[in-house]
Length: 391
Image (cartoon, rainbow, N blue to C red; front, top):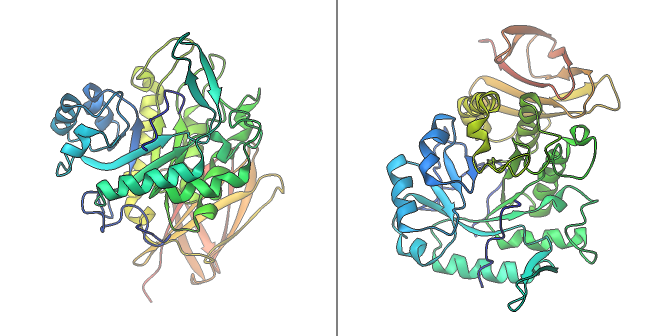
């Protein structure tokens, strides 16, 4: 995630229906249906209370940690974390504040090599997938009560990414997946894919999530990291609306956890830039509140084939995910391109006339014979709730 490479230390299978934390990890993330992992990447424990107020419920990574002091601060703040399995971490096997082990960050990218004599930096090849898998087994053997998380780089979604090295192949990626219980990746379309019009490639987020879902065969939990600052691009930054689209693109395509990358290096260096950006912080807080509200639905099994949607524009697909909790249907829909369209939805199981509430938009549609239409602005997100009438 462009901060540092975690040292790569040298199964539980879940189905899509299982969704989220698995109760068989005695010391893993909460299995409560109302809990959905919303994390922040590599932040100081001193800011945990501020992140908690914004709806963050998990830390991923600690700088040069975990240390006793870091764990103490996070415990006081009630902020669980996923961290390196170092000596201090292993000494806290029974500490509920640690809910997972961090395996590595971007092992699929070129790796930093420091000459011991000159201290000059060069780049070596990616970490071999076989080593990732081997070290995962060691992590699991040391503590099988927590999941192991591996974060991959933007090459998961960006086929033009040169940071993998000249000899790297897309076919290498499925070989990394067996090296973790939670497989994540990061791609930051607006700020960090070396395109002048990165705002037109938000769909890379969905592309990467869908690939990880495919490569894992639905047998691993998939998470992803999202941009919310300039990172290293002083000329571009994701807007609140674009960030919301990225979040829902990832969720609709199967991501079971969100990680916000909140560092900024240009135009200035700021480790916690999100906290210093009131409009973006307000947007992130709102997005997180909505995820928490909808967590029981997000954590429920996805209902495949229940809804079909047709876009009025062949150039603007609409991705949907369907959930059902009791007598309530949820259709989460995202316009996947930077252009408007109209979506025509069909849910045949509905009766002749049914109200369709559009969540957080203060409007209601009517489905007739199970069909309704709605307009989408560029990258629009619509979250529909439909209660089946009593029969």
